[in-house]
Structures are given as structure tokens and as C-alpha cells.
Length: 167
Image (cartoon, rainbow, N blue to C red; front, side, top):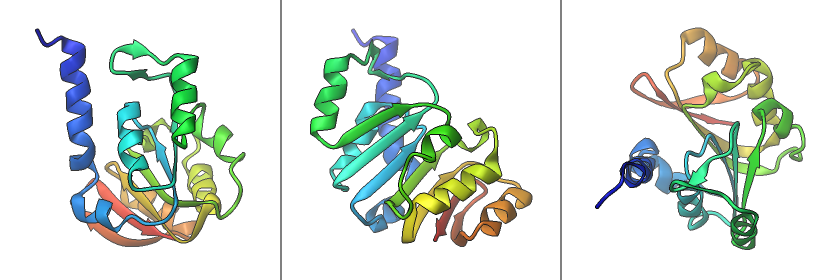
């Protein structure tokens, strides 16, 4: 019997590649990826197949499927160069070195940020030259202007909720 938790997990996992369009995902490059609001650890493990190291930041502890993440599971992930952090985005990003991240994926996490301009500035600071920010969330024209105002260049927009910015 398939439980509700299993259906939710499968939905989150199957949506991962539909969330990040295949051409966009194929063009992601570099060695370090940051996924803000990552939903499940399986999404981070899928990214790890493409990047040397993956960081996942979320504002609340998530689960692997429906089970709480244990310290031993954290250690298992870290051995695979997958690092999970639970904190306010603005507070944790200041601890990343400048010009460190190659690709940032932020899917439906923009509105969870309390200070969006500061978040855009921090994301810009920690991203390497020519690094990419893939932002999936409906944005107002003012928010796009805010993101561009800190230095990001909008290079592609898909519909009303997917944006690709380059540093």
C-alpha cells in the first residue's frame, strides 16, 4: 500500500526536474551548487550527480521521505559532499565566502526571505563571476528591478515565474 507520505515524496522528487527546465539544468555548470528551499534531500542528491558539492538551505528542518533526518544521515550526506543548513537565508549566507558558488537554485523561496534586497546582494556576493541564479517564483517588475539593481543580469525568462540571472 502506498502511503500519503510516499505520494508526497514521489511528487516532490518528480517535480524537481520539471521545476528546473531540462535545458536550464543541462547548462548549469561549475563545481558548487546552492539550493535554497530544497524540499527533500533527494533533490540535493540529484544535484550532487552534476556538481562536486551541494549546499541546501531551508528555514525549517525537512525530512528524508517522512522520517526525521538523524545525525548519522547528516554525516552520510556530508561524506557525499552534500551539506544541509537550517537557518534564515540572510543570516546563513553571510558565512559563505565571496565568489564561492557557481549555481544557485531558488525555487519558491523568494517570499520566505524577510529582506529581499539584502538577500539579492548576498546571493550576488557569494556567486562566482558568470555564476547563475535560477529563480523560480512569480516576481513583480519591481522585484526584477531590485535583483538587477544589485548587479544581476536577467538573461532568460520563462513565463511569469522562471528567471535566469547571471553575475
